[in-house]
Image (cartoon, rainbow, N blue to C red; front, side, top):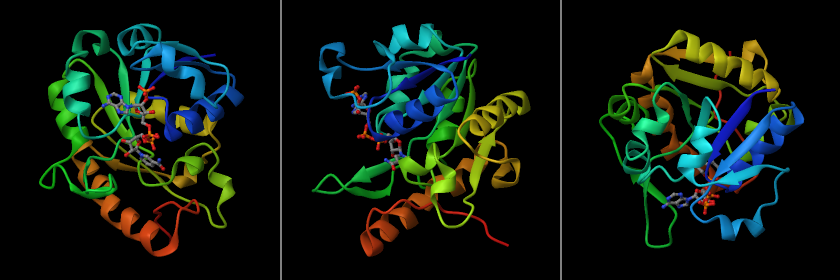
Length: 211
Ligand SMILES: NC(=O)c1ccc[n+]([C@@H]2O[C@H](COP(=O)([O-])OP(=O)(O)OC[C@H]3O[C@@H](n4cnc5c(N)ncnc54)[C@H](OP(=O)(O)O)[C@@H]3O)[C@@H](O)[C@H]2O)c1
């Protein structure tokens, strides 16, 4: 059993916590306000502040909004030192209705900026190219989806691969794109994701490589 910390308690956190809990992992959720966790619909987890939650695991998943992630996580740099940070966030601005708009970092990526801001932390970008339910249940789609990985540290990516296995992903579905700069492509895909949802609704899907 591995302890996994997820920052944020929204749709992604709930999906991932459900998948990891089924696989026998212990889940710690980092929240802004412990008194407001009554809405949690996921499995049994331990709640704490972001700093407390990070202190309880070697693996931390950023499932908070992409805008503000750099400031939030940089403020926790000491707590994150030596840890593996899995970034699933999409860094887009918001339109007047709060819906995702253009990329916040169009010439690089959130993941690269996180890795630069957190040199003592190994950052891996993954899972951001699909809707939350698919993350922990890849077999729910008609075809086999792809999950992309970007990160500089091979050992860290190997740990992430084993976590993806626990969620039901097969090796053949995992595509290691290379170093953290390859997060540019998978983050830019958010523009397509937003348009796909506008055109065809919120039914779960994943951006995938099909040959
Ligand atoms: N939903 C998807 O299908 C999907 C797919 C791919 C990637 N993503 C990315 O994954 C991340 C989470 O998405 P989500 O759909 O789970 O979002 P969500 O349902 O809005 O949940 C985000 C959670 O982050 C926390 N949060 C919100 N604002 C915050 C702030 N200013 N500072 C710190 N924490 C804050 C909240 O938890 P607390 O109130 O408990 O702190 C909230 O429940 C986002 O970056 C999103 O772009 C989402």
